[in-house]
Amino acid sequence: MNDPLDIRFDDGGFRLSQRFRMPVGPNGAQSSQATVSRPRLKVSALILVAFLALLSANATPHSAPTASRAQAVTRQVLTLVNEARAKRRRCGWKRFDAAAPLVLSDVLQQAALAHARDMAERKILSHGGRDGSTPGERATRSGYRWRVVGENIAAGQSAAEQVVAEWLGSPRHCANLMSADYSEMGIAYAVNPQSTLGIYWAQLFAAPRPAP
Image 1 (tube, rainbow, N blue to C red):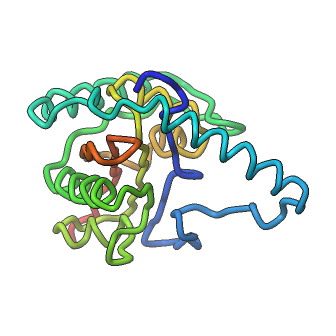
Image 2 (image 1 turned 180 degrees about the horizontal axis):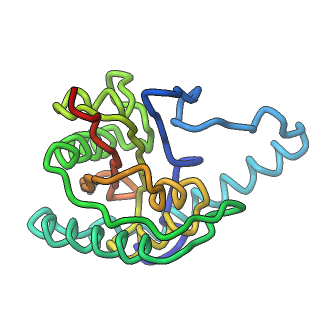
């Protein structure tokens, strides 16, 4: 799955805090698709058909990392994320200063893995869970008392370097990854050989709520 045609992203990273709740669409991000004119929709539909045809012809889901490599891949993603956070960076129009490194959270890891498996089983890329849950609800359900929470998802990337590079290349995902509001992270992937995309990634960011 090294072909870029085998990569799929949601429209943008999800972010939610206890102070402000962002309206979230079906895919976890605000959408401006309703403003597209009818002729452009026809062109977009033709492009989408061609894209899906190429995707089906070139997909190789079995090149995804195996479950036995999960711990190594987790550490690799954490290293790449913290290397990115160690430098100033521009995510789209917004500039970010270097941020403190993130640490892995076992609780966030469990929540990320559950959502990655859910997406893989349903063969769908979505911030919404099978039961309609949001990233914040899944973190709470796992036992994490959060002050702010965010999520990046992706599908089709066969390696840690590839998925992190793609997130950094997307302004909203990059903003989540670079945000100094977060101090902990969970990262997981799940594989479904019956899916065209093969592998589904979930990256959950959070900062714990101060002790009372």
